[in-house]
Image (cartoon, rainbow, N blue to C red; front, side, top):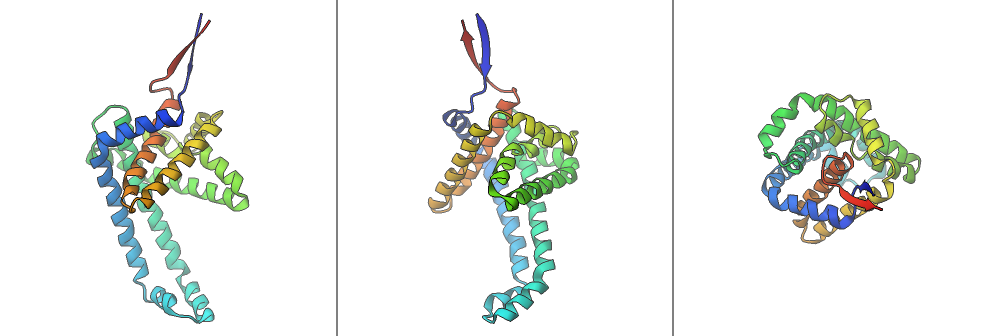
Length: 237
């Protein structure tokens, strides 16, 4: 009689666990989510307050719009870069909190921030590299972009859980973890997108709940693929 184990990546199982974690840690996760939204919108408001930006938004002359846009390109590029930096900083703290939640540890915004602060420069580089790689693959053809998005979906979480890991090692580990599971992971990704669209439909406010659930889904799947959470035992006679 032989005992084998398989990793449960079923939608029902992952959603159930993610919903359970969301209910337990909702307030703290909502706080970090709202902080990211507020800071991002505040920065966006600063960019949009530029007189050139306002002039471009109100003019109807195509040639003038092009001239104004050219002058805005450096500021828009800087604005986009800063937006990504803000997102990276908040994702770093959020993933640390969610990993602690899945691991059954105390979840604290302050402790997570203090713990991850030394890793932030490396994490930001990793975050930007992931965006660039997926974006370039998507620009060449949509399908390679989707494929790489799935294969590198755990790059950031890997770095958060293993702060001493190098950037290359994070990509390699994500690639290895997702090997042989592309179909299941792609399906879960589609479910997460649909879930967030449902949240938007529910008076927009619902998206704050669905984004927390969908991000927990990623962490739950990561832990299962890493073999560090429950696995289902199958007896083969």
